[in-house]
Length: 291
Image 1 (tube, helix red, strand yellow):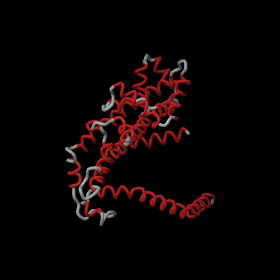
Image 2 (tube, helix red, strand yellow; image 1 turned 135 degrees about the horizontal axis):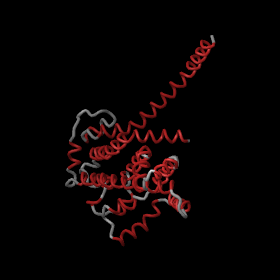
Image 3 (cartoon, one colour; image 1 turned 30 degrees about the vertical axis):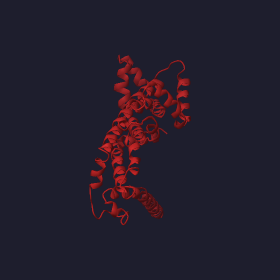
Image 4 (tube, helix red, strand yellow; image 1 turned 135 degrees about the vertical axis):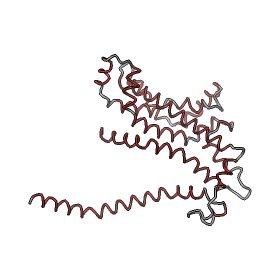
């Protein structure tokens, strides 16, 4: 009798909450459509001739064509593809080096005690309070005297030591029991073995999430390379893409090429996200459980 009463109560509560759930799902679907619609316009527009963009800018392509991408690949003697590969190389190299340095620094700050550790870490944290735009002038002066301007290293090496990535790694590694590391040391494991065989495998979800954030941040960077790089052969695609509006068709702004270029730029970000999304979700789940 009690079970029947309980089930009836649960059923009535569920029915009472159904309108609220329907309204919530409807709102989420509407929000998702609003967020996705500009992406749809961008992708569909990249397959339309320039004449169709002005009469059918919101719908599916009526005259499907790949000519926009072919023209884009041949634009200015292949400059777009060269800058695209520059961005892939710069973003991937920076992300990998950032994760290595951040995981090592997080391991040191979390599991080792040395003089001035907390003060040094606080100084790192204080650098996050300084807007990056304020550092562009002194960075330009330093790198010009080093002879690093117009090079790949000026776009990679200064970004390797990322304070946010160090902070996230340390916060996660603080949750790893010290007893595991002490037991490994008793078994004869050294610092490098503990780092590579215990810390890194345990930190894969956090490193995956950081990899997504750092890759996207470097891929979308515009201001820093715009100031440090003046030679075309070293420019990333985010700096080259706006130049499509400067030397386009004589009839006006080449919106068809711009949409194709924007679609091309989005592809690596989607690949990185879908490749590491399980790690990203795991890191969010771990964070919610720890909190």
